[in-house]
Amino acid sequence: MVNYQEIMDMMEPRRLPALHLVASEQTGRFSKIGGLPEVPAGFEWPLWKDRSLSFLAQIDLAEVENDTNLDDLPTTGKLYFFYDYEQETWGFDPKDRGSWRVFLLEETGDLQPLPVPKDADEYGAYYEKRVDFRKFAPYPSLERLDIDLKSIPDDDWDAIEDKLPEVYNDLPAHQLGGYPLVEQNDCMELECQLASNGLYVGDSSGYNDPRAKELENGADEWRLLLQLDTDDDTGMMWGDMGRLYFWIRASDLKERDFSQVWMVLQCG
Image (tube, rainbow, N blue to C red; front, side, top):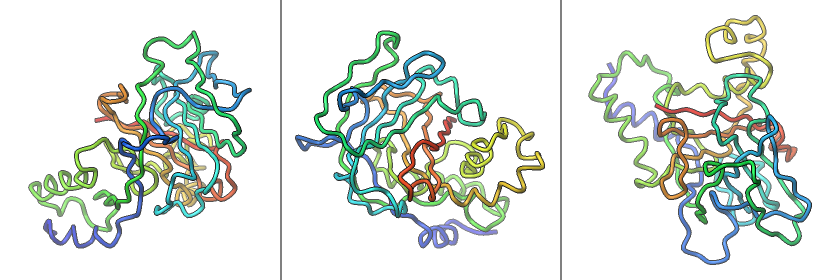
Protein backbone atom coordinates (compact mmCIF):
# COMPACT_ATOMS: atom_id res chain seq x y z
CA MET A 1 0.00 0.00 0.00
CA VAL A 2 1.13 3.54 -0.68
CA ASN A 3 -0.23 6.50 1.23
CA TYR A 4 -1.08 10.08 0.31
CA GLN A 5 2.25 11.60 1.28
CA GLU A 6 4.26 8.96 -0.57
CA ILE A 7 2.27 9.60 -3.73
CA MET A 8 2.63 13.38 -3.45
CA ASP A 9 6.38 12.90 -2.99
CA MET A 10 6.40 10.99 -6.30
CA MET A 11 4.31 13.63 -8.05
CA GLU A 12 6.18 16.72 -6.93
CA PRO A 13 9.38 16.27 -9.01
CA ARG A 14 7.34 15.24 -12.07
CA ARG A 15 5.30 18.42 -12.32
CA LEU A 16 5.63 20.18 -15.68
CA PRO A 17 5.74 23.94 -16.28
CA ALA A 18 2.68 25.37 -17.99
CA LEU A 19 0.75 28.60 -18.40
CA HIS A 20 -2.71 29.13 -16.92
CA LEU A 21 -4.94 31.35 -19.06
CA VAL A 22 -6.71 33.72 -16.67
CA ALA A 23 -8.97 36.72 -17.20
CA SER A 24 -6.91 39.84 -17.91
CA GLU A 25 -7.41 43.29 -16.45
CA GLN A 26 -4.92 44.80 -18.89
CA THR A 27 -6.03 46.84 -21.87
CA GLY A 28 -4.72 46.10 -25.31
CA ARG A 29 -4.39 42.35 -24.89
CA PHE A 30 -4.78 40.33 -28.08
CA SER A 31 -4.95 36.86 -26.52
CA LYS A 32 -8.47 35.83 -25.62
CA ILE A 33 -11.00 33.02 -25.36
CA GLY A 34 -14.28 33.47 -27.21
CA GLY A 35 -15.54 36.57 -28.96
CA LEU A 36 -14.71 37.18 -32.63
CA PRO A 37 -11.42 36.22 -34.25
CA GLU A 38 -9.28 39.23 -35.12
CA VAL A 39 -7.73 38.31 -38.44
CA PRO A 40 -6.15 39.86 -41.53
CA ALA A 41 -8.14 40.66 -44.66
CA GLY A 42 -8.77 37.59 -46.77
CA PHE A 43 -8.98 35.13 -43.88
CA GLU A 44 -11.64 32.54 -44.65
CA TRP A 45 -13.74 31.16 -41.82
CA PRO A 46 -13.03 27.38 -41.64
CA LEU A 47 -15.76 24.91 -42.55
CA TRP A 48 -16.46 21.27 -41.76
CA LYS A 49 -19.22 19.32 -43.50
CA ASP A 50 -20.26 22.57 -45.16
CA ARG A 51 -20.90 24.38 -41.89
CA SER A 52 -18.85 26.98 -40.11
CA LEU A 53 -16.75 26.00 -37.14
CA SER A 54 -16.91 27.94 -33.87
CA PHE A 55 -14.09 30.27 -32.93
CA LEU A 56 -12.60 29.27 -29.57
CA ALA A 57 -9.46 31.27 -28.85
CA GLN A 58 -6.64 33.37 -30.24
CA ILE A 59 -3.17 33.65 -28.75
CA ASP A 60 -0.52 36.22 -29.55
CA LEU A 61 2.69 34.26 -29.11
CA ALA A 62 4.57 37.49 -28.46
CA GLU A 63 2.46 37.89 -25.30
CA VAL A 64 3.52 34.43 -24.08
CA GLU A 65 6.57 34.12 -21.89
CA ASN A 66 7.19 30.48 -22.69
CA ASP A 67 7.79 28.84 -19.34
CA THR A 68 6.26 25.53 -20.45
CA ASN A 69 7.33 22.10 -21.66
CA LEU A 70 6.55 23.25 -25.21
CA ASP A 71 10.20 23.92 -25.98
CA ASP A 72 9.66 24.90 -29.62
CA LEU A 73 6.55 27.01 -29.20
CA PRO A 74 7.07 29.95 -31.59
CA THR A 75 7.73 33.34 -30.06
CA THR A 76 6.03 35.24 -32.87
CA GLY A 77 2.80 34.89 -34.80
CA LYS A 78 -0.77 34.33 -33.70
CA LEU A 79 -2.58 31.06 -33.05
CA TYR A 80 -6.30 30.59 -33.71
CA PHE A 81 -8.43 27.65 -32.53
CA PHE A 82 -11.76 26.51 -33.98
CA TYR A 83 -14.09 23.55 -33.30
CA ASP A 84 -17.46 22.20 -34.44
CA TYR A 85 -20.09 23.92 -32.28
CA GLU A 86 -22.36 20.88 -32.44
CA GLN A 87 -19.64 18.84 -30.68
CA GLU A 88 -20.29 15.78 -32.80
CA THR A 89 -16.64 14.72 -32.65
CA TRP A 90 -14.59 13.70 -29.63
CA GLY A 91 -11.30 12.76 -31.27
CA PHE A 92 -11.47 8.97 -31.18
CA ASP A 93 -12.45 8.52 -34.83
CA PRO A 94 -10.03 9.22 -37.70
CA LYS A 95 -13.03 10.70 -39.52
CA ASP A 96 -13.14 13.46 -36.88
CA ARG A 97 -10.23 15.20 -38.60
CA GLY A 98 -11.28 18.61 -39.86
CA SER A 99 -13.90 19.24 -37.18
CA TRP A 100 -11.30 21.35 -35.38
CA ARG A 101 -8.70 23.63 -36.92
CA VAL A 102 -5.64 25.41 -35.56
CA PHE A 103 -3.95 28.15 -37.57
CA LEU A 104 -0.64 29.91 -37.09
CA LEU A 105 -0.64 33.26 -38.88
CA GLU A 106 2.88 34.66 -39.01
CA GLU A 107 2.34 37.79 -41.13
CA THR A 108 -0.87 39.29 -39.83
CA GLY A 109 -0.74 43.00 -40.71
CA ASP A 110 -3.93 44.94 -39.99
CA LEU A 111 -6.36 42.82 -37.97
CA GLN A 112 -10.13 43.19 -37.86
CA PRO A 113 -12.88 41.21 -36.06
CA LEU A 114 -14.50 38.68 -38.39
CA PRO A 115 -18.27 38.35 -37.86
CA VAL A 116 -19.78 34.95 -37.12
CA PRO A 117 -21.08 33.42 -40.37
CA LYS A 118 -24.83 33.37 -40.88
CA ASP A 119 -25.01 29.57 -40.80
CA ALA A 120 -23.79 29.44 -37.18
CA ASP A 121 -26.68 29.61 -34.73
CA GLU A 122 -26.63 31.12 -31.23
CA TYR A 123 -24.44 28.27 -29.99
CA GLY A 124 -21.80 29.05 -32.58
CA ALA A 125 -20.33 32.05 -30.76
CA TYR A 126 -18.93 32.48 -27.24
CA TYR A 127 -18.52 35.45 -24.93
CA GLU A 128 -15.15 37.15 -25.01
CA LYS A 129 -12.54 36.83 -22.25
CA ARG A 130 -9.17 38.53 -22.72
CA VAL A 131 -6.46 36.54 -20.98
CA ASP A 132 -3.07 36.78 -19.30
CA PHE A 133 -0.68 33.88 -18.78
CA ARG A 134 0.10 32.77 -15.23
CA LYS A 135 3.04 30.46 -14.66
CA PHE A 136 2.16 27.29 -12.76
CA ALA A 137 3.00 23.58 -12.71
CA PRO A 138 0.22 20.98 -13.01
CA TYR A 139 0.62 17.59 -11.37
CA PRO A 140 0.65 14.34 -13.34
CA SER A 141 -2.38 12.13 -12.87
CA LEU A 142 -2.17 8.96 -10.83
CA GLU A 143 -2.10 6.96 -14.06
CA ARG A 144 1.25 8.50 -14.95
CA LEU A 145 2.94 7.16 -11.82
CA ASP A 146 4.75 3.83 -11.85
CA ILE A 147 2.65 2.31 -9.09
CA ASP A 148 -0.13 -0.24 -8.74
CA LEU A 149 -3.26 1.91 -8.59
CA LYS A 150 -5.02 -0.83 -6.64
CA SER A 151 -2.54 -0.23 -3.82
CA ILE A 152 -3.93 3.25 -3.13
CA PRO A 153 -6.47 3.42 -0.29
CA ASP A 154 -9.79 4.93 -1.33
CA ASP A 155 -9.49 7.89 1.05
CA ASP A 156 -6.01 8.75 -0.24
CA TRP A 157 -7.17 8.39 -3.82
CA ASP A 158 -9.99 10.86 -3.22
CA ALA A 159 -7.64 13.27 -1.45
CA ILE A 160 -5.22 13.23 -4.38
CA GLU A 161 -8.00 13.68 -6.92
CA ASP A 162 -9.10 16.74 -4.92
CA LYS A 163 -5.54 18.03 -4.81
CA LEU A 164 -4.87 18.09 -8.56
CA PRO A 165 -7.30 20.94 -9.45
CA GLU A 166 -6.04 23.19 -6.63
CA VAL A 167 -3.30 24.62 -8.86
CA TYR A 168 -6.01 26.43 -10.86
CA ASN A 169 -7.10 28.52 -7.84
CA ASP A 170 -10.80 27.72 -8.43
CA LEU A 171 -10.62 29.22 -11.93
CA PRO A 172 -11.36 27.43 -15.21
CA ALA A 173 -8.54 25.09 -16.20
CA HIS A 174 -7.49 26.79 -19.43
CA GLN A 175 -3.81 26.17 -20.06
CA LEU A 176 -0.89 26.02 -22.48
CA GLY A 177 1.48 23.05 -22.08
CA GLY A 178 1.97 20.85 -19.04
CA TYR A 179 -0.08 17.84 -18.02
CA PRO A 180 -3.80 17.70 -18.80
CA LEU A 181 -6.38 17.80 -16.04
CA VAL A 182 -8.24 14.71 -17.18
CA GLU A 183 -11.89 13.79 -16.86
CA GLN A 184 -11.45 10.19 -18.03
CA ASN A 185 -8.50 7.90 -18.70
CA ASP A 186 -5.16 9.64 -19.03
CA CYS A 187 -3.95 8.07 -22.28
CA MET A 188 -4.64 10.87 -24.71
CA GLU A 189 -1.15 10.80 -26.26
CA LEU A 190 -1.73 7.23 -27.42
CA GLU A 191 -5.28 8.06 -28.49
CA CYS A 192 -4.01 10.93 -30.62
CA GLN A 193 -1.26 8.80 -32.13
CA LEU A 194 -3.58 5.98 -33.15
CA ALA A 195 -6.57 8.02 -34.27
CA SER A 196 -4.45 10.45 -36.29
CA ASN A 197 -2.93 7.44 -38.04
CA GLY A 198 -6.27 5.97 -39.04
CA LEU A 199 -7.25 3.69 -36.14
CA TYR A 200 -10.63 4.01 -34.42
CA VAL A 201 -10.15 4.19 -30.65
CA GLY A 202 -13.74 4.63 -29.49
CA ASP A 203 -13.59 0.97 -28.46
CA SER A 204 -10.86 -1.68 -28.14
CA SER A 205 -10.63 -2.38 -31.87
CA GLY A 206 -8.01 0.27 -32.60
CA TYR A 207 -5.83 -0.69 -29.65
CA ASN A 208 -5.97 -4.34 -30.73
CA ASP A 209 -5.22 -3.60 -34.37
CA PRO A 210 -1.85 -5.03 -35.54
CA ARG A 211 -0.74 -1.53 -36.53
CA ALA A 212 -1.18 -0.23 -32.98
CA LYS A 213 1.99 -1.90 -31.73
CA GLU A 214 4.01 -0.32 -34.50
CA LEU A 215 2.53 3.10 -33.84
CA GLU A 216 2.52 3.27 -30.05
CA ASN A 217 6.13 4.41 -29.68
CA GLY A 218 5.12 7.60 -31.45
CA ALA A 219 2.77 8.48 -28.60
CA ASP A 220 5.75 9.97 -26.74
CA GLU A 221 5.91 12.68 -29.41
CA TRP A 222 2.61 14.27 -28.43
CA ARG A 223 2.45 17.39 -26.24
CA LEU A 224 -0.57 19.16 -24.80
CA LEU A 225 -0.82 22.43 -26.68
CA LEU A 226 -4.02 23.94 -25.31
CA GLN A 227 -6.60 22.80 -22.79
CA LEU A 228 -9.95 24.61 -22.75
CA ASP A 229 -12.27 24.11 -19.81
CA THR A 230 -16.01 24.51 -19.45
CA ASP A 231 -16.37 28.18 -18.54
CA ASP A 232 -19.51 30.07 -17.50
CA ASP A 233 -17.87 33.42 -18.35
CA THR A 234 -17.49 32.47 -22.01
CA GLY A 235 -20.57 30.27 -22.28
CA MET A 236 -18.45 27.25 -23.17
CA MET A 237 -19.71 23.82 -22.14
CA TRP A 238 -17.87 20.76 -23.44
CA GLY A 239 -20.09 17.71 -23.20
CA ASP A 240 -21.21 17.45 -19.58
CA MET A 241 -18.85 19.95 -17.84
CA GLY A 242 -15.84 18.58 -19.71
CA ARG A 243 -12.75 19.92 -21.47
CA LEU A 244 -11.16 20.17 -24.90
CA TYR A 245 -7.54 19.10 -25.30
CA PHE A 246 -5.50 20.11 -28.35
CA TRP A 247 -2.37 17.99 -28.84
CA ILE A 248 0.60 18.46 -31.18
CA ARG A 249 3.63 16.34 -32.03
CA ALA A 250 6.93 17.81 -30.85
CA SER A 251 8.29 17.46 -34.39
CA ASP A 252 5.34 19.39 -35.86
CA LEU A 253 5.76 22.09 -33.23
CA LYS A 254 9.41 22.45 -34.17
CA GLU A 255 8.39 22.87 -37.81
CA ARG A 256 5.66 25.39 -36.87
CA ASP A 257 3.12 23.04 -38.45
CA PHE A 258 -0.23 23.24 -36.66
CA SER A 259 -2.20 21.53 -39.40
CA GLN A 260 -1.79 18.10 -37.76
CA VAL A 261 -3.02 19.07 -34.28
CA TRP A 262 -5.37 16.44 -32.83
CA MET A 263 -8.21 17.25 -30.43
CA VAL A 264 -9.84 15.17 -27.72
CA LEU A 265 -13.02 15.99 -25.80
CA GLN A 266 -13.46 14.43 -22.36
CA CYS A 267 -16.26 14.86 -19.84
CA GLY A 268 -17.28 13.08 -16.67
